[in-house]
Image (cartoon, rainbow, N blue to C red; front, side, top):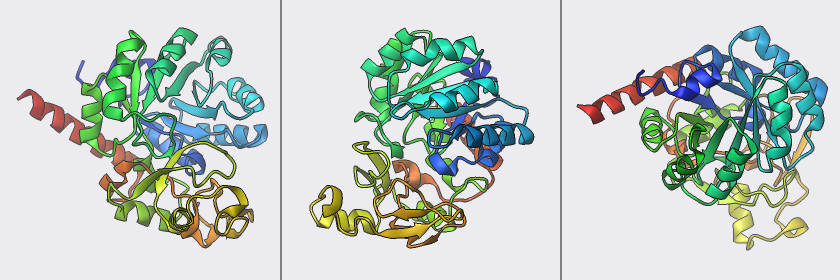
Amino acid sequence: MSELDTPVCALLGIREPVVQAPIGSAASPELAAAVTAAGGLGMLALTWVNGNEARRRIRRVRQLTDGTFGVNLVLDFPVEEVLDVCLGEGVPVISTFWGDPAPLTERVHAAGALHLHTVGDVAEARHAVDAGADAIVAQGWEAGGHVRGEVSTMALVPAVADVAGAVPVLAAGGIGDGRGLAAALMLGAQAGWLGTRFLTAHEADTHALYRERIRAAAVTDTVHTHCFDGGWPAAAHRALRNSTVTEWRRAGCPAGEQRPGAGTVVAVDRAGREHLRYADMIPTAGAHGELEALAMYAGQSAGLVHTAEPAARIIAALMRQASETLAGRTR
């Protein structure tokens, strides 16, 4: 078995040790299916949809691929209805985040699915292992989107691997190319969990402006903040620095209605839904308005993302560079 053919690949039913992180509204069924078809694990983010919409997205993925895919649910929100739909539809992988996985594990296993849980520190990892999680996602502070902990990927992954024992660990945060994937494997992870890299995939539901901002970003262009807390109060996150962040910081980072422009509609999505400044909504395809002011979630690995291309090409490039990196190490 090669260094890239890890045990978690067999567990998840994938060819390549690459998971597309559940990047919110950007995680379209088309993206999840494309990643899965290319040998990775595609993921849907279904926390904020109702059961009917969850069912529609799951079935759309199945129309596009017969491979393994997963869904993600954030346990800080009511997810019972959507979980019932996911298990009833036979989704093979259930991923959870930001809460206690223990109450769900038995139900997930009884339905024949695998349970992955994302953690931000070693104590959370130990609890998830004790709860019976099938794999642990160790999310470093470099990650984009909502960030659970305050430890870097370089330190967190081996620490989690030490307490996980036989339970596989996946590395999240700061992985933007094959070199990062190779490094994660050397740290004790068995796969990489990549979000920012897939935001510019052709199949992602992201607006052209969002893609351009990521491609132009340096590794220093993101901020770890509580700025975009509309919809998920008190949840820390990492996003590209933009006008909303800049004005909020200039005002001293006030809360609630004291924030500059609070309550102002800055964009409308293609379904006609209005989005306020400080909301946790990203610029999706077809949206219009002051899109630059919306939350553009991205990790520090944005500074390594320079292309927009199909998901299959992204995965092929990741695997090629990871193989070359590991080969160079062993010469």
